[in-house]
Image (cartoon, rainbow, N blue to C red):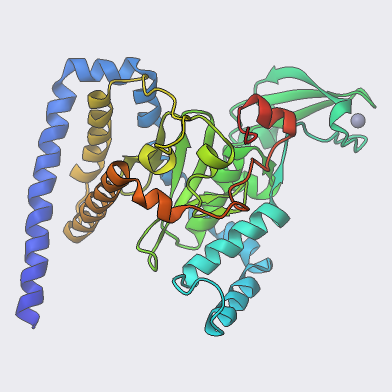
Length: 362
Ligand SMILES: [Zn+2]
């Protein structure tokens, strides 16, 4: 037996070594190709992919993860997980789900309903005015306060309280550990903070970006053996057609950025049978796939662990194959379809805001 498993390991190592060389060659070729390098500098979508490819690195800070764990332990997440486990033993609920799925489900629910707050316009810090009609936008400003700078705010939205005339600052924080304290924002802040929570629990996860101004997450479910859609703003689990079907959101590109690779997930999230696919005209398809090959080659060529590289490549190929099957048969989509009650218009954000974004289900 041991000689057989030795053989398997040496085959894996051989495959990984050959593939590493292959990725390095590809990387050298693309680095030397001035046309391709020019595309990376000038095409907005290519620049976005380059900018987002390492986004998961932001969550590997042990201190931030510790802060996140403390908050989760103090919450009611684990008692919810125990309840789900008991119910499963009694034959209730989905028997295919495992402990980690329960943990993610409970985390989503707690995060959406008890932890994080959606902000259209911020409440007034001075007089406590929370009436959205009594708060008006008053432009933008660069980060200036200690909280804003430490929180790596990309910018600060300024509002004016019509009741007490106070100026209100709403910094769009990017530092996930700062978001554990501020506990508020729009989808970017929600997703950013939620990914830190997932990572702190050592759950394999990735960030998903949509070109029509939305972001969400996915985690890899060992019990389901696939990547599962998660939207922390909506308490949504495994509902990939929520946007296209539920919100009636029109979409063109959806990309996933994980620790092991970046991938085009448009086939998974955009339904073929609806008239809600926007044209993919921001880059030609062959260049787009080369951009993905380039960012992945960069990562894989520098991966020193043979077994680790082998696993990443196998998982990537499995996922690409599954997405191709989705594309040709669309049977995956039908199996995945949620009941009418779960396929609902957007909950997060004001009615006017969702309508303006074309996400109100109409
Ligand atoms: Zn006020």
